[in-house]
Structures are given as C-alpha cells and as structure tokens.
Amino acid sequence: MTKNKGSNDFSDIVYGRKSVRVYDEKVKIPKDEILEILQKATRAPSAVNMQSWRFVVVDSEEGKNRLKPFIFRNTSQNDSSAAMILILGDLECYEYGQEIYDKAVNENKMTAETREAQLSRIIPIYQNFTEEHMQKVVTIDAGLVAMQLMLVARSYGYDTCPITGFKSEGLVEALDLDSSRYYPVMMVSMGEALEDGYDTVRIDAEQITYFK
Ligand SMILES: Cc1cc2nc3c(=O)[nH]c(=O)nc-3n(C[C@H](O)[C@H](O)[C@H](O)COP(=O)(O)O)c2cc1C
Image 1 (cartoon, protein in one colour):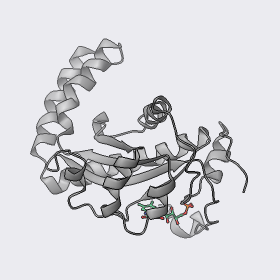
Image 2 (cartoon, protein in one colour):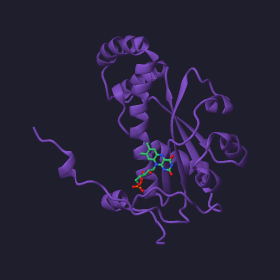
Image 3 (tube, protein in one colour):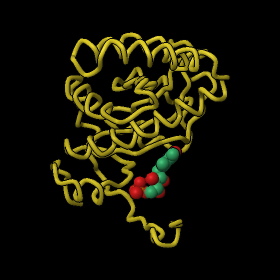
Image 4 (tube, helix red, strand yellow):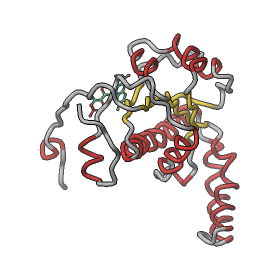
C-alpha cells in the first residue's frame, strides 16, 4: 500500500479517502494534534452555528476497553486505531448559544444588535424542539463535522473510518457522561493505515440527480 503522507491537494484528499479498518497500532497521535484536527473539523457548518457536536476521544487502552462491549463488527478499528472519536450531539446545545454569539461580537464578526435579534429568535425555538426533532438536528450537524474530520485527518496523513455499527444503549453512561443530554451519533476511527481501504464505486451523479 502507498503511505498517506498527508496532502493539501483537495482532489487528492477527496479521491484518496477510503474507509480504513486496520491501522498501525504503534502509531499514536499526540493530543495536541488531535485537537488541531478537531479544531479544523469544526469549521464545518452547523444549523444556526450552534455547533451541537461534542467529541469523546478514546485514545487509551483503558478507554478502548470501555468501548469494547459496545462495538460488535468494528473490532479491528477499535483495537488498532490511534483514536476512536465518538461524536455526540448535545441535545442542550443552545446552552452555548450566548457564548458563541458573544464570541462573534467580541471578534467583530457580528453586531450586538444582530446577536440580540438572532438569540432571542433561535434559543426559544431550540428549547422547544421535541427530543426527536433535536436528535435530527444534531445528527445532521454531527454528520457534517464527521465528514470534515475525515478529510482533515487525511491532510495530516491519517486515515479514518466512519462507524455507526455500535450499540448506543448504555454507551454514554459507560463514558461517565449524561445520556439525557448527549446523543451518540457516530464514531470515527483514526490512525495511520496499515491496510488499504476497499476500492469502492459510486453511482453516476447523472443517474441520481434531478435538475428542475
Ligand atoms: C453513516 C456511516 C456508517 C458507517 N458504518 C460503518 C461501520 O459500522 N463499519 C465499517 O466498517 N464501515 C462503516 N462505514 C463505512 C462505509 O462502509 C463506507 O464509507 C462505504 O463502503 C464507502 O467506502 P469508502 O468510505 O471507502 O469510500 C460507514 C459509513 C457511513 C457513512
């Protein structure tokens, strides 16, 4: 296999990304680098910029052992990756609304008037979503950040696999987090590839696109 040395070429990143399921166990990723990758990933868009994603980076043996009972088909990713990144949706993400919009004002990216107008409209709407609706909102945000995470990781020379094949029930509690607040959407394994991902195909865009 050809080693992924990282790249800033967009086509390289897009066409080179494949789901990798076996990683070099010896390769660890420093926490600072993981945070840098996540920081870039969170440039992903989110509904009303509420950034409802939360991450649990499982990069220790102890953490991987905690995940084991919840992972059925994806044992090679858990066993060999440098990190399993669980992406949670924060069902109370609006608690960060003030902080996010204050930051925008402080950095001169938004006027105080716009902040007031936006927050007074958005927060009550978010607070009144049903749990099911909020789960949908955070799932979309999480999907976007996951995709961006996988592309950013590739630019750093790492490979990833998106994973929904895990048992959600009890998982958040097992990680000592509040399951009434955090909704597990997906995991992304990340590490240095030891095996190539499969070559996969796509249906032609023409076949699945309607122009109206
Ligand atoms: C939402 C989602 C869930 C997935 N879950 C798993 C999984 O549990 N285990 C796995 O090995 N691959 C999983 N995959 C990877 C897909 O099998 C893979 O993306 C697809 O076959 C296309 O291959 P590629 O990613 O290499 O382009 C998942 C992908 C997505 C988008």
